[in-house]
Image (cartoon, rainbow, N blue to C red; front, side):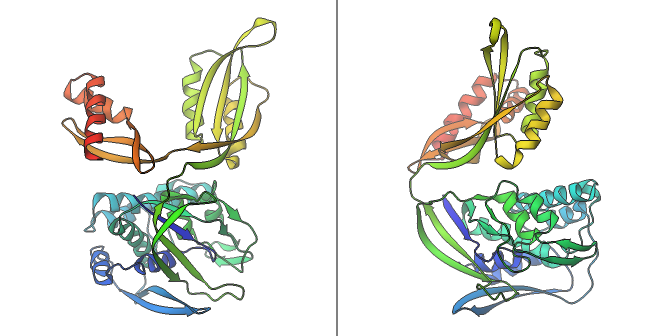
Length: 390
């Protein structure tokens, strides 16, 4: 599986990322033909070069020759759906816009469907997002990682008035990523760049054992006094190693809650961003039976997880401590079986599939649809995955 590492020492924007991906050797004619299927009027795609600090980088631009309307999420989804792209490219592009709509909706106290996309709904951003999805699939990238992100300082003028940098939407999207607050002049990470990362990428573990195959550079439009405004992308493969991450374990003991509530509690915790939730029987003082609720989550979600525990349980206090994990690299693959397409989670070690776990919901749906035992569907999905992943 190819991995793309974004060395974002000058931040990231949609046009920088497209330029860097094209600089890896993609056919620009094929790219423009794919983007033309969006049937967006009044725009021209250009690919040139820009030299910054002696670094020659691809400069991708969308030149718009006529005014463009404000667009809602449903309108942008329809634009992408009519494009001549694979289903996976469409899903990735729509996913990027969806996470952006959710962030904007939270900031403006509305719903994702009611969000008006102004700057990000423009033609250039639609092409940037669809273009990123096309480039990643064409290159065969299965994993996207990003370095710590410089977030810049200052204020920016928008249709809503003066807003702080980083923009509220950008900050909302980058929860869980490694950030360098106060680093850089002006806006270093745009909402479009942040949305791509939220939907498709993860912070790179440090150190990152990596075998580089190709390197690309994408130039931005601004000029900074302290660094070249360039995004560097490394395409290659991870060298066999266990992944690591840093999380919080948030716990509480409960001895007086209706057991029927625990299922609902777990669902709310996962919806709040929990990575894992476990319920463990425990004995408290005076021999009282209890349940220990343990939640693994990113540090930025501590307050949100605690709020769910206070809302849904009788606890009056929670405890937390940092935990470090070693884990296998994993990916979701779609496998063809006699019962239809089933998603499976594949964990890898030293380049080989170590564990294969069919997705329960897919298997259950297939079992009900075909009137067959669930265990048969799960077994067939596992065997089909092993055969197709050899």
